[in-house]
Every structure is written in C-alpha cells, then in structure tokens.
Image 1 (cartoon, rainbow, N blue to C red):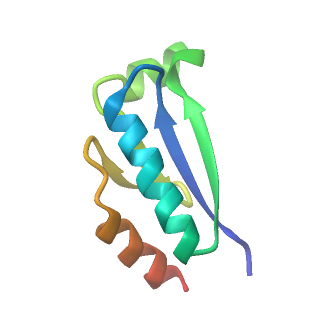
Image 2: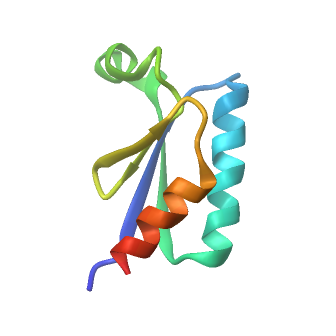
Length: 82
C-alpha cells in the first residue's frame, strides 16, 4: 500500500495558505500522509493555474479543497482512503 500524498499549492504572504498549512499539520497528528508544499510563484504555469484559487489542496492528485481549507472534509477523504 502506497502512502497518501497531500500536495499544498501556496505562495508567500498568504494568510489563507498559512491557515491551510496549520490545518494540514493538525491532520498529520491524526493521519499518516506525506505533505508536499509547492510555491506557485516558482512556475508561471502554476501561477496561471492556481493564482486566484490558492491555497489548493490535492489528495493523491485529486483536488479536495481550495481557498478556505475544510479540515473535516479532508479528514473524511483521508478516512475513505484507509
């Protein structure tokens, strides 16, 4: 069984991104997953794709949240994976 990966697309000076990161850090205490954080400002393509949506959370490549990140929704999705 492969480990679940959560990808957080973020950028500097983004209060919603900071809240999303804190939420994911809380979830790591309860669930086993690998957290990958990607700054969209490192790529024009990512900035174009996610610039107005950040933070964006993907669970194993599937979008599960953007903007305000719902801890319970992500927790439910993690439970479905296990």
